[in-house]
Length: 165
Length: 165
Image (cartoon, rainbow over all chains, first blue to last red; front, top):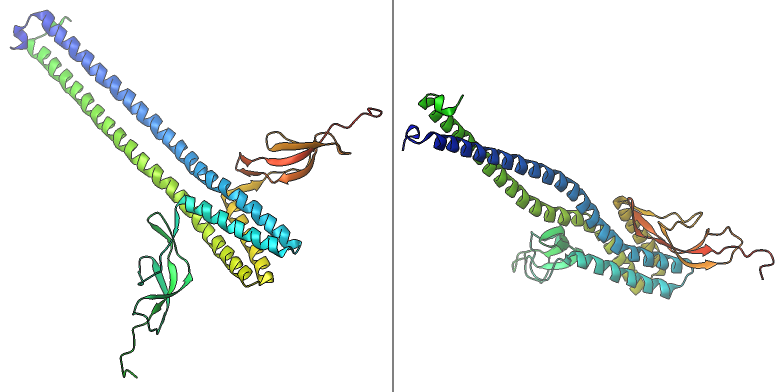
């Protein structure tokens, strides 16, 4: 059907309907764009707050550690050695527990040297298999999948061949 | 001008132009909505990463504290009291420094009781002015503007009036 063949009110109706549809899309477009902009602004604010709050929780967990450490120091001042020692054990347990809750995990050092999680500070001649970890000089830690610090280790050197000397 | 009075190609042109305009708005609407949706998804991922990274930095700063605490424990095992005491002082200094860098601040307790940052555990008759802080039972801390823990204090009771007994 050619528009000209349609009765005149039908063409007017089509024009009006199209106009209304166009206006509706334009309004939707304006609304979505405004929502997007508001969301963007909110996200920036939220992220700042999120980081601040994330720290807050962890810092708060460390307050009892700080308290007990100060108590241990007071015991040291008084030369109460047993109390000092007990206090240090308590502080260690608390700090370890707080960090465990964060997902901190010690890096395994049993077995072979693994360059992804170990750092070889020395190689040493040894009866052990070449490349096995002989000693841990500094513990390594992971947080989730990420290596925060590699374990610093001593690695077994290749064995000298019989009569190599 | 009534549409019916316009030449037929003009009405067709108007219809076509309106249709094109409508399509353009619809396309813009779809594009902005898709961008919005992608942004929303990205934000969710970013926020998780942001919190994880925020923790990572602080946890990493605490590793040397943990190391030195373990060294102090080893000194305790060996009954090297001087080394233990020195170690505890070092650990305290390190933990305090790490928390200071996070913005942790001790709540002031000089002067009058302030219900916003102090918690009165006891009131005690005293020569001091009513409502002044007599003793701090547990230190309080703030992180930025937020009170992580109020200072727990003993407060001076109202002075008994002369001949009040």
